Each structure stands twice: as structure tokens, then as C-alpha cells.
Amino acid sequence: MSPIVLVGPGKDLVEAHRLLQQMRPALRFCYPDDSLAQAAEVAICWAPPSGSFARLPQLKLIHSVGAGADPIIREPSRPASAAVCRIVDPGHCQGMLEYVLWGVLHYHRRFDQILANQSQQRWERLTQHGAQQTRVGVMGLGQLGKAAAEQLARLGFATRGWARSAQPLPGVATFTEAQLPDFLDGLDILVCLLPLTERTQGILGAETFAHLTPGAALINCGRGGHLRVDDLLGALASGQLRGALLDVFEQEPLSREHPLWSTPGVTVTPHIASSASLSVIAEQILTNIDRQQAGLPLFNRVDTALGY
Ligand code: NDP
Image (tube, rainbow, N blue to C red):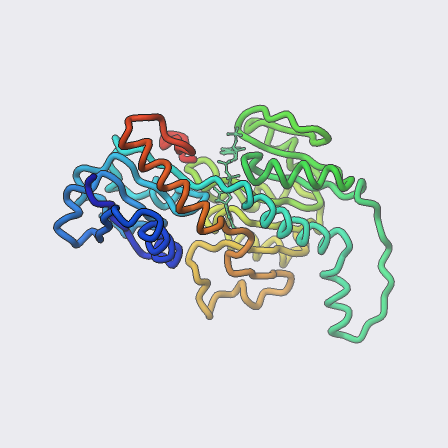
């Protein structure tokens, strides 16, 4: 078979390469600068540098090492005829669920306020509310959002979910794309688990925040491109939002000078909400390589027109 080209950069890519080679010693890997790459039919990447695919004329499959394929889809040199696939690790849901639950409980039980009080040696017993009084909305009801929304509903939160199409879920009030204002109206906590597409870029902005209950909180685990940072800073300053838990950023790592590090009410985590296991990444890529070679339909194929 033709060599497989690794289109950097990315730590996951280096680790995936090592494991793939171990699992299939017969496979040949190369980098885009290598003359062998001209013949490559399969590329593996996370965030391809601009113009990467222009030098790879034979590509038939571009496989992401992550759950999202947005940097691949946005890359202008991507050949339209090549299939794009992503990783779907059922274990991913557990990590994301833990992260989202931590964030929801943090705001629901007002630990943000309690920690702020501690820094001022202030003893204040805040009134507790039942979970059913906290309205939590999950944007995106795919592999990850569905699991989070279902679990939040099971814990008693007044849970809503938003997806492009109708996605009925037990215990969750679900809304379609056109029903965005109804979904947002009066939410106490908004969780973003959307893919980054042309339609979702910048969706976490002033217009969205204005629908939430004053003093609401935001949890963004989708992509940095969903958030309009200036709008967030404005909403925090006005009190429309009281806090934001952010795991993803337009530029990662977040630069040391970025205002988000030190904005009161903002918690920054370094894109750690959930990661797919390396063995699942390697197994799914190998399975799809085999299927591509055999002319079979690929697993976890991204709809490049929709962007996810
Ligand atoms: P899926 O592709 O399985 O699901 C995407 C969901 O978003 C679907 O429910 C889809 O609707 C919905 N959606 C897409 N476009 C729109 C739109 N325009 N309006 C309303 N809803 C929309 O994705 P996953 O659940 O696997 O992952 C979601 C995202 O989470 C990833 O794309 C990635 O950005 C992020 N992620 C973050 C991680 C982290 O550690 N922070 C780790 C892994 C992923 P429908 O059901 O109708 O198709």
C-alpha cells in the first residue's frame, strides 16, 4: 500500500504514529516534505498547516486524530474528493461528563461565590436551591452533548438540549436550530458542546447571552471559535454573566498576556475536558485505512458540507 502521510503539528499525532507503527509494522509513514508523500492516499492529522494538502495529489482519506475535524475542514488546500473521518471514542463521553458536571455543580451550588468569599475571610451561608430549579442548556446533542444532557436530567436539573435537527431525549426538553431563542430563554447555565462550523462560529456572543437569566454562567467545551471574547468580557462586566468555565480557545496554548487568565469570574482549563484514548485512536484509524483500501464505507465520516 502507498505510504501514509503525517501532517503535523500535534503531540497526539506523534504518539499516534508511534502506536500505529507498533501495531502495523508493515505500514510506511512519511511527512509531507518527503518525496514518498506524493503517492500517499491517506493523511493523518489534527491541525494541518496552511497549504499542507496542496502537495499531496493522491489523497483519498484524511483522518483526524481527534473528535473534531474542524481544522481539516477549514483548510483551503483540502481536496474536496477526499473523505474526512474523525475519532468517536465512547470513553470520551465519561471524561466530558465529569468536566461538565464539575462546572454545573460549581455554579449550581455557587462554589464560585463561596471561593470568592473565602478569599475575603467571609462566612456567608448562601441559600441552596434544588437541582430542578437550575435550568441548564446543552448546545449540541451529538456523541458528547447527548450523554451530558441525559445525565444532567437524571440528576434532576431542568435540562434543555439544542441540536440542528430534532433529537428527542428522555427527560430533556429539546429544541432545533430554528428554536434557539426558546432554548436559551432564561437558562441559568449554558454548556457548549457544538462542533465549530460556519453556522456555529461566534455563537457564544452578546445576542445569546442576552437571552439567559441575568447572572447566568457559561461552560465552553466546544471550540474557542464559538466564543466572542469581547462579548464575554462585556457580559461579565455588566453582570449578565457571573462566570465562565472555558476549556478551549482560538489560539492554544492561551498566550500568557491574554486577559482571560485574570478576568474575575473566568476559569481557564487547558483543553483537558476530555481526550480519546490513544489505543482507540490507533484502532479506528487502522480500521478506516483497511476499509478505504477495500473500498468499504468508512466509519465516523464527517459531512464536509455541514462541517461536522
Ligand atoms: P457530534 O458531531 O457527534 O455532534 C454535534 C452536535 O452539534 C449534533 O447534535 C448536531 O446536531 C449539533 N449541531 C451542529 N451544528 C449545529 C447547528 N448549526 N445548530 C444546532 N446544533 C448543531 O459531535 P461530538 O458530540 O462528538 O463533539 C462536539 C464537539 O465537542 C466537537 O466538535 C469538538 O469541537 C468538541 N470537543 C471538545 C473536547 C474538549 O476536550 N474540550 C473533546 C472532544 C470534543 P444534529 O444532532 O442535528 O446533527
